[in-house]
Image 1 (cartoon, helix red, strand yellow):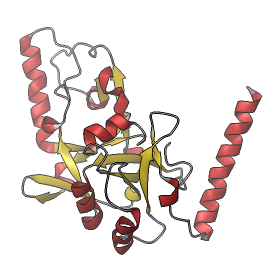
Image 2 (image 1 turned 90 degrees about the vertical axis):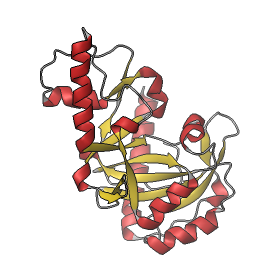
Image 3 (image 1 turned 120 degrees about the vertical axis):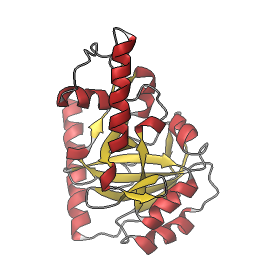
Length: 256
């Protein structure tokens, strides 16, 4: 993970995931403490909720009806498992001038997308059971694999509506943990950190700037912009757990 060297990992009940967007939208999310819920019908992939293959046009119409009805009731928030891929920043982060928000999400609500080269088992036209519905929600074509996507399904009735848009407030299941400024952004980390600290407890959110790596094609932290961490008992326990995991991994690799 790109932030592993500069931030303390979340509790094991949570997973750190990342949401890259424009600076304007990210700042709005930070200040108002919420994130936009996307409608499936407006996502980039036209095959969303259409992963099964169809024997004929009648079955395709039946599946399209399922997508339409599902879209009327549900939305999704889509995250990436990491933020180091430059293509993500180009596509979603306003050509590296945007901001990446890192969240701690409860593992039991996260859905990891599966990437396939062939369409799913042929759709029979019967109502989708839960297993099929889950597979449809979590399956995308292999060309999208670079996104390393994790998503949460959000009933629209649980959202806050602003005009035609839907938002999900930050809470115990959706905790802001990192704010990463794009490598080509003119924003200074100190300025953005002051904004973040006005809305969130100090040390709960780590704000820093990204840069282009020197020896790879990755986006990495700009080390001088990473703030020092104030040591609290909770942070000390988290850091000890983090170091223990690193030591255990090193021992495992040495034994191979």
